[in-house]
Image (cartoon, rainbow, N blue to C red; front, side, top):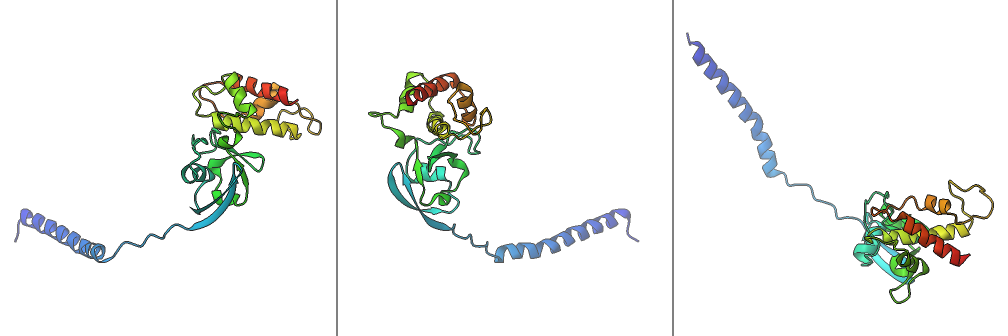
Length: 211
């Protein structure tokens, strides 16, 4: 009769042998099965009028409008900030309305008219809002400035068009560019430098000129 030591060795041998038997088919399958082929990304044509120029692209259907502008059209003025639509650095004007370009696909804007910060003005001929930001030091470090300016331009257009906001007292009457009205509408644009008062002054300056 075998002692306990011999029985222990036998048990270990059985366990090791069983594990090896189970592992062999898996190893063989790994060696013989090729990895699944990765499908090529779907691509589609898109045409847009950007800053007055007709532009045609063929893009991965997952490309955001922000990436189309920055990476494919090389318009780097529009900034990528949070990439979640929370900071407003990527704001552009599409068909007269401001949007967060990081939250929308480029293909959704086939045929649309898009204005970025490059399309508002040039160093030699600034847009009135750009000039006001310079005058009132509303740009600070400058990273959020393109989105701030695009939003500010659109905000004054919204007020002029009579589109109410959450703080509008009269929803059907004429809108006025009050400090509270402009601050409420600009609340989706974040400035880490805290230049909000300067931005409000720049907007009030332009609003006064347009009145």
